[in-house]
Amino acid sequence: MRSTARVQFTPPAPAHDWLPVARPHMPPASAIAPYLDHIDASRHYSNFGPLVCELEKRLAERLGPDAHAVTASSGTSALLLALMALNLPKGSVCALPSWTFVATAHAVLAAGLTPWFIDVDAETAMLDPQMCQTVLSRAPGEVRALIPVCAHGAPLDVEGWAQFQARTGVRVVVDAAAAHDSLTEAPFPMAVSVHATKSLGVGEGGYIVCPNADFALRVRMLSSFGFNGTRESQMVALNAKMSEYAAAVALSAMDNWASTRLLYQQTAFKLRIALKDVPQVQFQEGWGLRWVSSVCVVRVPQEALMPLIAFLKSHHIDSRQWWGDGCHTSRAFTDILRDTLPNTEHLAATTLGLPYCATMDDAQVARLTGLLQSFFQDA
Figure (cartoon, rainbow, N blue to C red):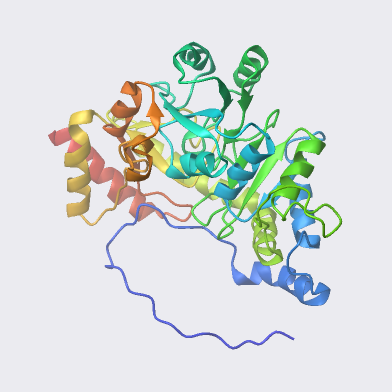
């Protein structure tokens, strides 16, 4: 029987009227408890236990009978494992957008590949397969892999990228960190994060979905010392497995995914409706209508960005430039080769994350949207 003793601590109290830019939506302890009981009974805590296997089965089933899923310790390790599983020669050039979170570039470097930053489409904020085929002619070497990023959870042009891979022979691996909801198929490896900040919140973890059983097995071996049924290490690998405890939270989150998704969608509807007459605030295409994520990322006029951030802060409302000035500007990546990045630079000057969460109430929506209306009316 589990102890009911609680560790007592007092977190710092935020200002009572401060509206944060994001608030995780995680399963409550009561929903996770039955899975913890299962762990207590099985005494299986890691190494692809029954809960991890059940989670992988359920994740794969979402994408159809031919999909395979492998869990990982984080979204970054999921992307790293997918890149390692390509088995490309060390130093191979891997193209990636600079308009992404830094984890994308970290994974490329950790996989022993040579990253090359390229520009995204100005409208979608994502790599475009037709544009990329043209860009390849300017590469610093033969591009062997390419990573489209699902910007803030937006859906991918799956057919376009499948055609790109077939035409060019360049291996496509998708950074779908925030795109749990928008994934509908996996013709190539896609790495998803289930960090607490994501729509399917687990705390820390990730998963890879792919169409090939052999590739999935290679990913699994790479996540577990190169083992495959024996204690012999068959390849240089990592320890990047998901624990049974993380799987317990993930299964609980999956159980409640329909209601969680609805909460995110309802809040998105409220924001869209309240700001329908404020054309200066542009939502991502389809956000809250066809797909959901755990963040609200909008475009605003370039001259308004910094004044708006200051204005919101003066009213105790948080905001965030999610990807800063682009990945290429981080100190860790200053020596990485890059193509010209005009669209990335424009996105950095016009993109802002606004407060948004699954449990955002009507008063918070009204407060935020009222201030946005006031700001742009007076601008």
